[in-house]
Amino acid sequence: MVVLETKDLSYSYPDGTLALEDINIKIEKGKKIAFVGRNGSGKSTLFMALNGTHRPQKGQVLYHGEPLRYDSKSLREVRKNVGIVFQNSDDQIFAPTIYQDVAFGPINLGYPKEKVEKIVTDTLEYVGLTHLKNKPPHHLSGGQKKRVAIAGIVAMDPEIIILDEPLSNLDPVGADEVMDLLNELNYFGKTIIISTHDVDLAYSWADYVFLMNNRRVISEGVPEDIFRQTENLKAAYLRKPVTLEIYEEIKKRGLAKIKSCPRDIPDLVQTLRSQHLMWVDVPPEVEVGDTINLGILYGEYAMDSMYEAINCRVLHIHEEGLAIVEMDRKALRAGSIGIYDTSRYSHDELMRIIKRDGIECVGAMGKKSKLIAEENDIYIHVTSGVIDRSILNALSGQRCLILTHDGMVEHALDRIRGYMEKSGINIPVSVANPRAEK
Image (cartoon, rainbow, N blue to C red):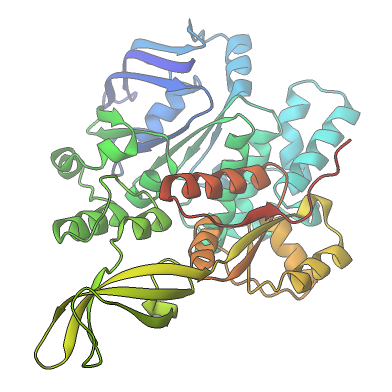
C-alpha cells in the first residue's frame, strides 16, 4: 500500500533557486527506504516537502492518496503522522531537559498529563535514555542527542519516520545504536525513510532506493539493481558499495559459486567456492581412483565449520609422489547462536546460560542490552553488525549469544533463519529465555 506519494513536484527557494524538479515517487507502507545522493542533490528539501514544511510551487504531495492541505489543522495532523528527524540534532532539541523535550510533542497534541507522563517514560526507556531524563541536552554525546531527537518523534507515534542523514557525525557505536533502533521501529510496522550518501549503508539496509542528482530522482529500485547502474552512480558522483565490488571481482576470477548480489558479509562469504582440488603427498602404494583420508582441517583451513573431516579421491599422481586430489568435506562441529531477551532480564538466569552453554562470543544490540552487559562485567565481543558477525562466528564453530530485547529478538531470528534458508547451512539458533506460554 502506498502511504506517501509525490506527483510532478517542483520547489524553488524564495530567492528563485530551483531545489526540486518534477519529482514522482511512491513510498510503500512498512518499508525501509533510502534516498541516496551527494550533498546538494535535493534530499533534505524533498523531506521538508513530504511533511508539509515546504509547499511546492508545482505538483502535489499525497498522504494515503489525499493531497496535503496547508492550513494549520491539516499540517498539524500530517506532521503527527509523518515525523522528521533533522541531520543536526541541535536544530531539533531545545527544551531544558531530555524529559521536557520528549514531552513537547505529546503536550502539543493535547494529551492529558497522565498520558504524557506514560508516553515519555515508555519512550525514554525504549531508546535507552531513562537514566538521563533530567539531564540538559547540551551535555549529551552526538549519539545520545540523536536518540533524543528520535524519541521526540517516536513519542507522537507517527506512521512514517523520516531521518535526514541519521548517522552524520556519529561514531561507530552511536551509529549502530541508531540503526538498531530504526530496525526495531520498522519491525513494529513503521515506515522508515532516510537520506544518505553512504552507499554501503543504503545497499545493505534499504528495501528500496531512490537515487538523486541535480534536483531529480534519476533512478529507483531495489538496491541490487540500483547499485549496479554504473553510469547513474557516476552521474551522481557515487561509487559502488564495497560488498558489491568485492563480489564482482571474485566473480570475474571464477571464485563465486552463485549468481546473486550479496548485500552483507555473511552472504558474500557464502558465494565463495569451496576449495575442491589440492596437491598432497601420497604413499607409493596409492593409485589413481583411490580414496584417502587427510584427517581434520582446523580453523582457517576449514571452509564451512571450525573442524572438517576430509576424504579425498585421487585424480592424478605426479612422478615425484605428489597427487591432485578432489576433497569431500564433512563438518564435525557446528557453532550456535542463542538470543537472550533483555526485556525479561534476570542476572542469575543470564549468568547460568552463559556458563551452561559455554558461550565464547557475546554480542549486544541496543543501549539497554549493552548497559546490562556492563553492569554484570560481561565482556562484549561484538557491538556492531551483531547479527551478521554472530553468523560468521557460528560458521567458524563458536557458540554465540546475542543480547537484545523485545521486537529485535524476532528480527534476529528472522535474519539468521533467512541466511540458513538462502545458504543451505544449518546453524542451531534459539531464544535462550523464551517467553512462557500462557
